[in-house]
Length: 415
Ligand SMILES: Cc1cc2nc3c(=O)[nH]c(=O)nc-3n(C[C@H](O)[C@H](O)[C@H](O)COP(=O)(O)OP(=O)(O)OC[C@H]3O[C@@H](n4cnc5c(N)ncnc54)[C@H](O)[C@@H]3O)c2cc1C
Image 1 (cartoon, rainbow, N blue to C red):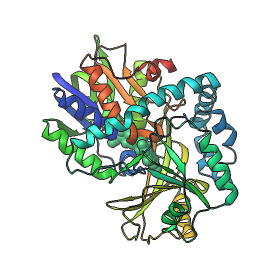
Image 2 (image 1 turned 180 degrees about the vertical axis):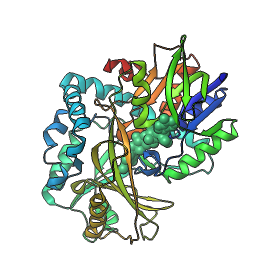
Image 3 (image 1 turned 45 degrees about the vertical axis):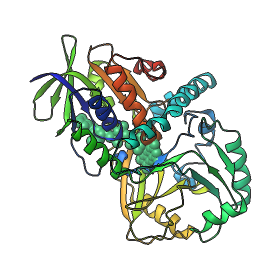
Image 4 (image 1 turned 60 degrees about the vertical axis):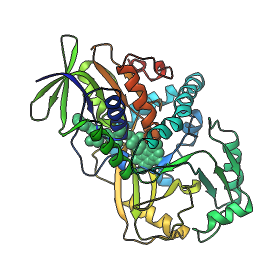
């Protein structure tokens, strides 16, 4: 069926919802399509941190040098499951190429520009949503328990480009303040001043959905099976065989976006970087504490309206592989060893960060069709960059100049 007046957004995660709302509010008539999968996607299960400090792409020589000691077999967060070697080995080669100093520098400039706009875009969006208070600009902390780790960690952060994010080494008082939730107070820490968190990822998704519907947007529970080009236009085929021919089409299907674009001859070498979380509503975590990163354990703990969540792990592979239950156990062991004021029963969740080998998102327009746009590959930073991505896509669809240069995010870099 032709839907010439419609903008169709495929994917109802944070990126798709931000795009759908921004386009709808600029006068578009948007239909958002998502299958409502269970477990829900990364946009629901993330750590809630508005991480504007992470301007250095993870495709770096430093990351490659540290990967061996960061493997789970040595107690670290990174897994490269043997059964998934066909996924992560080619990804690893591309990552190594993207980590070359000149590409890393260009990637950092590009990510820095996007993250520089991320908090202003979040502020604009949050101010327009109900309920208020979804964005909390109360910073975050990184702590270490070992003296040596604290000294090395501080030095490493002092040598890291953190873009527009500012931090300082924690005073004794700040360490005691943070240490309230730990059996043993940390030996050292840093406090980021102008980063933030959301009140609850699920509440953010619900608020975006409400705002989208109130603005006149429509939503449909369905799976898109394929995209086809008819003439110069992209059309959709749903799983039940129905065809939709929209005026504009935005692919924001997270880690599944690559498979949708491949038949059109477009390379989007995404990998699922799976993360795990545990969450409990039974806790005594003080409301004034920002997210805390326990860097020696590669763990971030965030207090949400719905409970305290501990998130971690980076497992390279496939979105729908069976979960590794040992990782939930390990997160529970970390919580117990730290003495966090949180009791089970813990809820368990696993989901995929959609990651491209250079750790830059793909945001732009396809040249093969006059109406096809894309926004995916936001890796560890999709919650942070969702609102700015929505603004960029709305500008592109509206024929305006986007507020930052989109060339570095063009999919053709993988051609
Ligand atoms: C443990 C963990 C912690 C994280 N912490 C943070 C954090 O603190 N801060 C931060 O900024 N980011 C964080 N992230 C990353 C962030 O969650 C992701 O980058 C972000 O959620 C990606 O959003 P998305 O909308 O692109 O994809 P998703 O959330 O995966 O949503 C994609 C949607 O597309 C739908 N879809 C897929 N295929 C189709 C199809 N064929 N047809 C229709 N719909 C389809 C899916 O059902 C899904 O709803 C974290 C991720 C993890 C795993």
